[in-house]
Image 1: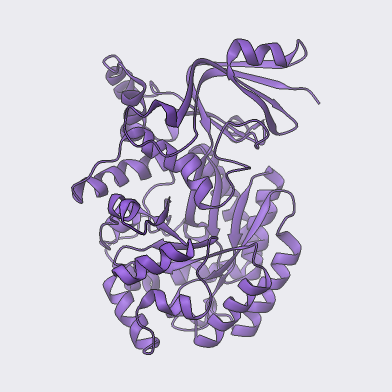
Image 2: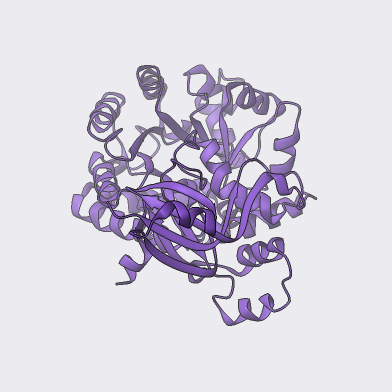
Length: 437
């Protein structure tokens, strides 16, 4: 198979950057190269070194002066909510009942699911995101549509059909048994097929009865290698309703704890209003708290205390995500721009290297897939994003005064969007230009 040599300024992370000057935390080459063969990275580093390994047969693509980074990773997003994004004026529970659940009833129609899955993954790629952790609708067909589209594109994606058997319209409900059976069938069909990963997905405690929560716990025990995703402590009314539904629980987190849903591959969206006991439980189990800043601001849910969660005596594993359609943008650049503001409102700062670590290696670590994606390391899948910090007139003007890589990254985070994404490689194949054509 023909090899491809990408040339550009390469940036990849080896660990969390403690400060803006923590140069040992990242690998940067002003003139870098990434050699790709059969969908994987064969070598990366200084261009001249990589070029020698490439040989004359390699096809070279010169992306200078742009930045080459690992593809962005979005760890919490609802693909059926594309036509819910930008819906006015409700907090979480009203928003779900007014907009989300009626929209998700449409996914009983398999053709509708296939259309939205295609458009959704187009949008992800357009914004530089090469891996998502997605919620499908309650309908088995919606997950089939998502995985089929993802597999056709050879993307590494994680997804699952939501399990929900109460407190929602009839059109988006399953039963404890059908939720279990559909999930088992989807796992058998899709988990491990190509680059596909299945996530056991009880939507949240409010829409799952104790019987369904038992089934979700059984699935996690039967498939301990799978991810589990749900929502936790996003909104005060949600927390109060959960306590009514599960009166014997010590707190919201204890509901999931009781049914065996905490663990290293468990992803909890939002986690804004955690008690110290709940944060300890998540930390001790290795569970992941997913930061969704645009959604939390849009729905007025609250401010995720990112830096405190990271440095507490029992720190939390943290991921970042768009949470479309509660979130307001498909871009991880826009997500971290809003994340910066949320963290600033908590009296802290997030430096730009930390932001880009988070949406690449950091999210890969949170998903336990860092051996496959999230870096430019030899042997990993060739998911790569090419960023242009001069993509718009405003960005070009600001770049006239940018003197450091940190300033360029912060500019990309603050002013960048899909226009700053020049190209996206998925398993070594140019994907954004395919969409454009």
